[in-house]
Length: 98
Image 1 (cartoon, rainbow, N blue to C red):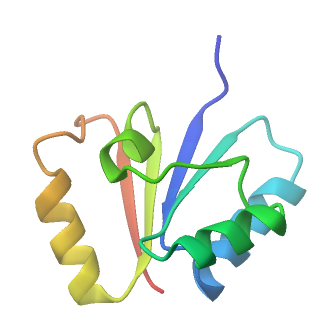
Image 2 (image 1 turned 135 degrees about the horizontal axis):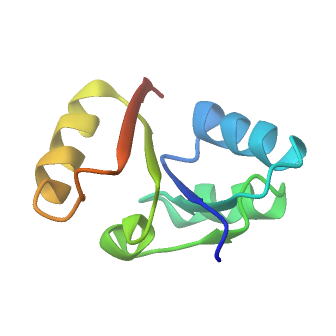
């Protein structure tokens, strides 16, 4: 059975910090990151804040048990609008003001 997947959308200070904490917790989780800025995403991966980066938003969220939106609130609303048809009802979504 695969490890539960957490997707972090927005890998700035808040998202990367959450990813680092999850990675350091030793929990059996797969942490996937997505950011619209490639350099921000690459930096988070270099810092080991995520296991992998997914450039496609939909693929990043595919199979996630939890999606964390670490983006400004207006971007969170836009992102949820994009994903609303694709997020299963069993997926937890958490919005942080990233």
